Length: 322
Image (cartoon, rainbow, N blue to C red; front, side, top):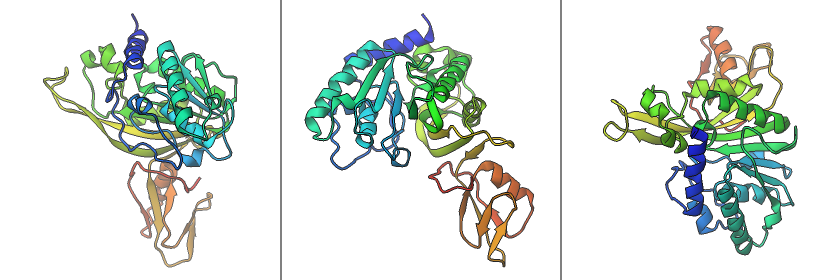
C-alpha cells in the first residue's frame, strides 16, 4: 500500500464518520451575510487554514477546489460565484464526494440563495486533474499538498498551473516546519496523511511553487499549528509546526526571478518628496509601501540611511510594489 492509499483510507473513514479535529484549522470560519454552514459540513472542515479570500473572488470566477472534505469551502466559494458549475470540486475518495454531495443538499435547504447545481463534483486527483487547460480562474487546496512527497508535489503544482488561466490564482493552506524530522517520522504514512510529517520548510515550499512557473507569490498568513512532542512521537525534541496561507499567481516570470511577498515594508524618510529607484519603485516620503523580498533586498543593498525596510511579517494583503 502506498502513502496515497493510506491517505485515501484515512479520509474515507473521515467521510463516513465526521472527525472534528482531524485537522486543526487555525483561523475562524468565515461568517458571511446570509451564509449558513450545516453542522455536519462544519464538523468535516479538514483544513489547517482558509483559502477563501474575497479579493480573489471578484467577477464571479470559476473556481477549482481539490480535496473537497465536507464541502465547506466549496459552499463559501459558491457564495461569490452563484451560477451553475461555477465551483468544481475534485476528490479521489468516492465516499468524500458523496458526503459533500449530501451536505450540499442540506446547505440548499438552509440557504435561500444556494443551489446544489452551483457545485460540480468530479472524481479525480490532484496529480491528474479532470479539468481542461486554462479552464479556471482560481484553484485552491487546503491541507492537501503537504501530504505529497516531492515528485508528487511537483506534479500537483504543475497540474494546477496547467488548469489556471493567465494571471489566475492558486490559493493554498498547508503546514510548514523549519526543524528537521527523523526518518521514522517522515516514513510514517498515517502521520503524513494527518498533515503532520510531510511539512516542508517555508522557503523550500515557496521554491517548489516558483519552480513550476508562478511569477508572483504572496505569503498571506503564518500561524501556530501543532507540536510533535517527545514521548508521543519519534522525536528527541519538541517539533513546532506552523500553517501558512499562500497565493501563487500565474504571472509571467520576471527576468530577475519571482516576486515573493512575505510581508516586508519599505519607508523612505529622507528630505525629498519621494525616492525613485529608477526600477519602477517609487517611495513617497513617510508612506509605507509593501515590497517583495527581491525589492527589499535591492533597497537594502543601496546602503542608504533614509530608507527603512522591515523584516518579514509573513502577513501580506496586497498593495505591493510589483
